[in-house]
Every structure is written in C-alpha cells, then in structure tokens.
Length: 415
Image: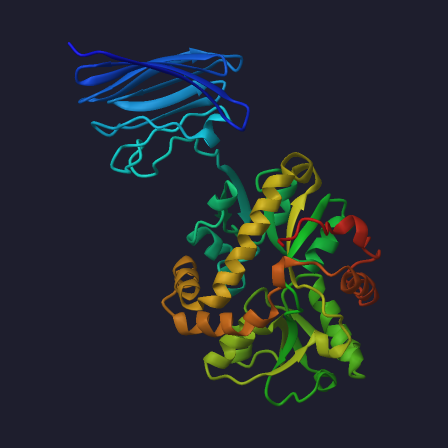
C-alpha cells in the first residue's frame, strides 16, 4: 500500500496558526489540523468529506461530512448540508484569521449547496412597523423595502402591521408591540402633549399633504363663510379650516361644521358638503379620477411651513434597546423609496394588492401625486420643524409648543 505523509505549518497575516499533518492512503486523505486551540480530525475520500473537531478557548466545535455540515459552541450553532460528493477541503486564510474554516467542492460548488463558503447566517431580528392608514400610495417605500428584501440586507425582517378599526400606531409603539409606525406629524405633537414618550426618527413625506377640498363653485377659502364644511372628528381638522380661512381673510365662526368621519369623497360627490379638510394626494386625486372637479386650497399656500406630513416614529424605550435595528429599518425604507421612484409600476401593483383593489389607475395616479413630496433620505430638517412647532401652536392644534429637540431624533437618518 502506498502511503505519503505530509505535514506543514502555516502562519497567516491575521495571526492565526494552522498546523496540518496529512497521511495519504490509497483512495483518500487523512489529516489532523490544529488551529486556535482546536484539534480536528478528518478525511477526504470518494464518498465525501468528514471532519470532527472541538476544543479551544471559545468552546467551539464543528462537523463536516457526507450528510451535512455544522458548527457551534462558541460560534452559536448552525447545521446545513449536504456535502458535495467527492469534494475537496480548502482553507481560506481570511476566514481562519477570524476563527472559521471554509469548505468548498472541487467543482466550485459550495458545500451548503451554492455559496462556496461555510459561514454563519446572520440572525435577522423582527422589526414591526404599524401603518397609519389602510395601504395606500404614500406607504409604497415601506412595501417596496419588504418586497425587494432590502430589510434582509440590514439583518432585520421588517413586518408591516395594518391598522384595525382606526390608526393605532401610537398605542402599538408606546406599548412595545411595534417598534416603528407611520404617523401624521400633528398626531405626534398631540400624543406627546398627552405625555406619550414617542419620537420621530425620520420623515417619509417631506411636505404638507393637508388641504381644503372645495366644490367647484368655491373659488377661494373665504367663500366658505356660511357654508357647510365636513370634518372628520380629528382635532386637527377645525384648526386647518381656521388657519386657511383666516389666511384668506375669512370668518371661520360663520362656517357650519358637521362631523362626517372619513367619508370626504362620498360627501363631496353627493354635494352634501361644500368643502372638507382632507389629503390632496389621496381624496383629491380620487375625486379627480372619478370626474368630480374640486378646488384645492393647500395649507402650505396659506401660511403653513413646509413641514413633513408623515413621519416615522418609535418610542424612547425601543430606541434605547434597539437603536441599531431602528437605524437598519430606516436604511431599508430609504432604499425602498429610491426603488419606488425608479420603478413605480411594481410598487403600484403591490399597493393595489395590499389594499384589495383592482383599480391600479387610481393607485398609479396617487403615487404620481405624492412622489415629489417624499423626503430624500428620510431626512428631518430641524429649521423647518422649529417653524412647524410654532405654527401648530398658533393655529391651535396643540396648546403647548412642541420641543423639537425632544420630539425628533436627527442622527438616525439613512445616508
């Protein structure tokens, strides 16, 4: 029988030392490896590769054979496979310097079935994001981030939670059942005024979306005097109505306000109200698509600063425990924003499916309307927010001026 004994010492630039003793026996290769305090035995033959080792200061172990591979102990523990029949053993110096071996088949096929390298899979942590409303075009970057698996690139798994009977993001985030939520910036101010310790960490929409939508016969806001205006019941609606009408010299006290919930489109279509505070990019577009013209009086054109309408919030408690995950989620959403703008049609199809509608033309029109208002890189503008805090107080949305320094976190935005 032919026997060839091979031995050697290999020193790598990363500081690792590999001692190898090999004995070639007819039809196979038997070897002993020592590195980093770990002793390993194994062999390569026609049936595959087998390695069993252990020890070391880290308490590490690993196994590699015809039925699969695995490593654990100090490394945690991973099991995979099966191995490539007739595969060969290769050590990657870069991996050894980090205390991990690499195995690959002679034909270039990875031991795990395709990667060419044995490595620990990163643990992907769940990050739940609560939506502000039912799925709509504004939220497209979030849905795109999940569809394109951009969250996985940052070692998280972004889970989208749709609202129940109404927007419940504040409650979910404050209670720790969601790590993030989309929220109207005025609702953020109201929640903090009530003592809820939530903060905004990014802006999804960087411009105001609120407006008064009026019947065609109403040519300017002050013409709503002695008219009927439908309000949703949210505290911000009367404040918007007052701000826009007063900026145009109108007397808001003469307006008859009726609560209509969230049926703005239907009430305008049937002529039961003369105007409604609503979102020009959602209800305004929906009315136009249905052939009903309206005059749109945007708050930004009547004294409001260019504040970010939709912000991304978290709680101080979540930020203290999972800051890196919050940053990773923002990076994924920022990537989803870029992809949505570059490739809007897949986003349209995804939002339509999530909303349970076959009317893609409406979703497409709404996405086209909101696209120019997305905040680049989800960035928050401190100077604009200082103006917003003063304006929200002046028009009566909140009683106390929001403290911008405590309400927003500016160092987590995507690059």
